[in-house]
Length: 364
Ligand SMILES: Nc1nc2c(ncn2[C@@H]2O[C@H](COP(=O)(O)OP(=O)(O)OP(=O)(O)O)[C@@H](O)[C@H]2O)c(=O)[nH]1
Ligand SMILES: [Zn+2]
Image (cartoon, rainbow, N blue to C red; front, top):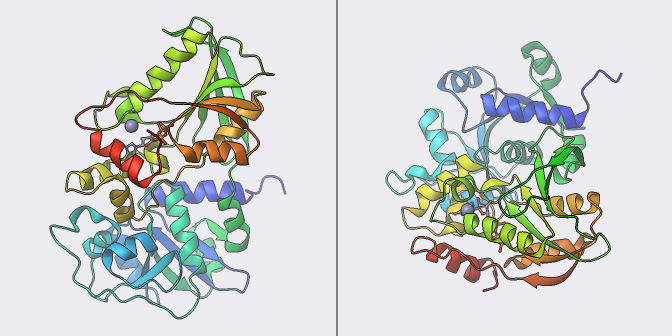
């Protein structure tokens, strides 16, 4: 029946549930099931409720976080850490959140599980990541998870249907476009794109009327609230944004994609957690790893989707990031030229720029 939510809609609902601190129910085809709660939004009451159910809850974390905690990961990209019987909410949160790693290190060694399947744990961690929360979930196996979900009004996510879906990007559709005169050009036009999965909208600003038959001067800009809006000196995003628009204004044509992938795809709250770690001496990449994220969680395929839907097939790309060029080429957008964008070096972002060059292969 068409009024029933499909897997896309159920996942969107699960993301919202996890962000609010609700449990979601997870199940596999072979009948095994579990309930999962995001470690970040877990409350003491809900942890106590979990303990009244049969079974042993674990906290599922990424292998990145496990490395920092020196916990053995037997499940590839995730690890299942056993929660001791006397552990309270602060113990669970300390496994998930690295803020206090240095001041109050975890008393180890942490015990991790190696028996059974980690499939539902992986699904739970993936869901917390896609909800832009810390990538960690408390997972409790349950025998009749369907019935439990129905009785307790929980969203049910089927593993086999969800996993391929979470790996794919959602189709984007243009919602609206309208004229937007801006400082660098009166001939600006803003397009808004919305994904089908209830996720973030992304924008494209077109300057002038670029010829679709020729390579267009283009920039894929990832949202940076701190740099773009607040004028942060810790990164180079603000000057890059304004520099790219200025160049498009001078040339009279261009397209800037503003992708809402704040903090390289980890969200603003997690980026601020990374900044807190950077103030303790870790660089950008180390901070992401300690939080449990990869160096860069963005999906640049979004950029080629938007360019294609606007009718562009080749670009002169304003970037220093070779990953953006490689992804454009792989997804059918020809990069005829890389236009360097070196602006905005400050005393505060020198280390950040050096780490980009040393660890992320950025071109100078
Ligand atoms: N996680 C994390 N994200 C950061 C940090 N500093 C800046 N960012 C984010 O990094 C992204 C920078 O994106 P872009 O402007 O596309 O830059 P880039 O990938 O370095 O590539 P080019 O600028 O094209 O060379 C933005 O989403 C920022 O919010 C940080 O210390 N940690
Ligand atoms: Zn920035």
